[in-house]
Length: 194
Image (cartoon, rainbow, N blue to C red; front, side, top):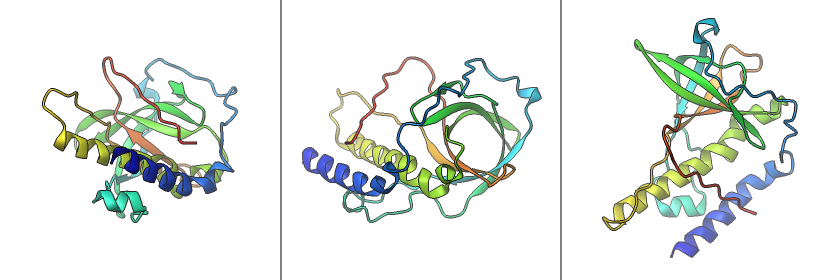
């Protein structure tokens, strides 16, 4: 059963990502400077963002068949956030930025994952939903289903919450994804679908 799910998922995700794969591969990010230090929050301006919460798939059949095209809530909530000026880490396509969310008197540390390309077509809502949010939603759904049936002595799986953000104060109101920072020691797995 797992191999059937994996094959169906790989085919479905490959189809949905094929249109973007030809336009975005590894971005030449040698010019992107990284700063691992925590930002000086007092010097950063407050930004307004639209926050679209994740809407996980409702069933395995819907996930395998790719019936659910939109995996975030349709109506966003406006939040105030501060974002570091430089990424603290970068991958082949995205940079990870320290950020703070200011909401109802509390400050929460978060991470923004932003495309390293400055090309506006790489910063669209559709690009993030197809390339980032959909894979995260599928992984969270499968982890939740696994947790329902796993034997008690098997390890647990936890995923960082994820959502789609739109910067409202920036030119062309670009998109990015938001995650919670991972604290402590952890194992990091990457699955590449060819």
